[in-house]
Amino acid sequence: MSTSQKEPSSQAPKFFVAGVDLGQKQDHSAVAVVKKRDKEFDLVLLKQFELGTEYGSVVGYLKLLNENLRDLRRIMIDQTGVGETFMSMVNNSGLKNARGINLSQPTKQDIMTFLKHCMEDGLVHIPYDREFMNELNVERFELQETGKLKYSHPAGTHDDRLWAFALAIYYGRYDPPGYHPVAAVNKYPSPGNLMPQLPRSLWKK
Image 1 (cartoon, helix red, strand yellow):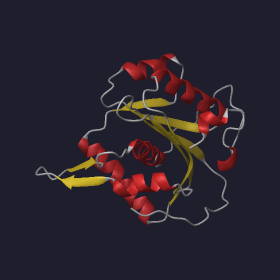
Image 2 (image 1 turned 60 degrees about the vertical axis):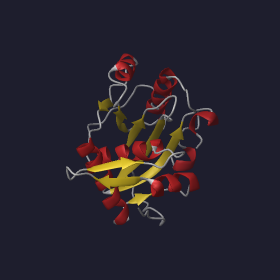
Image 3 (image 1 turned 120 degrees about the vertical axis):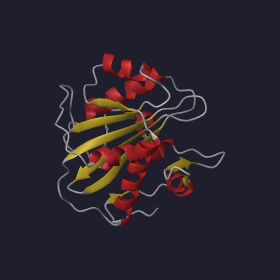
């Protein structure tokens, strides 16, 4: 995969979309937030939780995101393997803009193909992060007898942030209805000042 390193245009952002990939003991939970500007996407936040982090902490982090991003239109959550447990926690927390999805192989292929095309067309802007770049580059795919692609990563590596990012990009192509929590404070924060009221430990890479 390739990515655009050019400076994004100064055009005002339209809205934000978050992607969430869940893990716990063997895989990390991860959150990515992209800013959608016309057909372009800016990665503005990439969070990887420590192994073993309880889901309640992830839900709490998503609530903080919702309160600090005024136009966070959608939080797309990969609930594959965790069933309805996590989504029940999310719904009970009042996150009305969150949606869960079970990632089948065809859906994964659609998501990753869309991300690849956007990156090749220079529509994706990612601040340089060596670890994340490695995560993008080591992802493997295998063509199965069914004609579908199976995605994997080498032993000792992770792809949690990649799938969170890919989910945010994929669902950012839509224009979901606006959702404005009462506690919203920042209209359009810049990447370097995304959540100034949160402890740095909550949002640093």
